[in-house]
Amino acid sequence: MIDDDILTEFRAAGALLEGHFILSSGKHSDRYLQCARVLMDPMRASRLASTLAARLPREIRSEIEVVVSPAMGGLIIGHEMARALGVDSLFLERPEGVFELRRGFALEPGQKVLLVEDIVTTGLSSREAIEAVKREGGDVIAEAALVDRSLGTADVGVPLFTLLSLDFPVYAPDELPEELAATPAEKPGSRKK
Image (cartoon, rainbow, N blue to C red):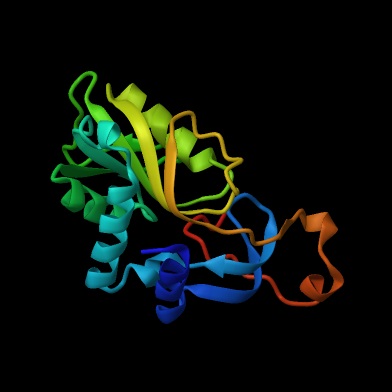
């Protein structure tokens, strides 16, 4: 798949939203990608994961022992990436605001992990998830995500591989363009705080 094909998948799923959105970073944008919608169709999710897995360098693919994803956004794509790579899929949760493995999930000391997210914007969630994997004994060797909204500026601390890089303008709350400020804002992500 090429970038246009991937973006077509998002549009076909109604996952590319327009309006006034408050992102998890606190910044505002007139566009939002709702990855949960593009992953609703299991066949589409499988196609996207297979394409993303194929973009990983062979030397990284051969080292991956397990996929770990942060819940909620990374759950489905992480599971599909694990299927494409032929490894297990675990997920992190934040019941108390800090990522941790639960539900009997565990990592072997030094186990080679591919972290999988839906979207990377600032890299904050990725860095928090990587720290959690380290606390659990794993070694994150790379991250894969469907979309990079940072245009390559997010530093997640490991090599980052994505399907699509998007340049949606984002604004600080006190620097909104007039037309955006006049539109009611919504916070569509999984973090409501």
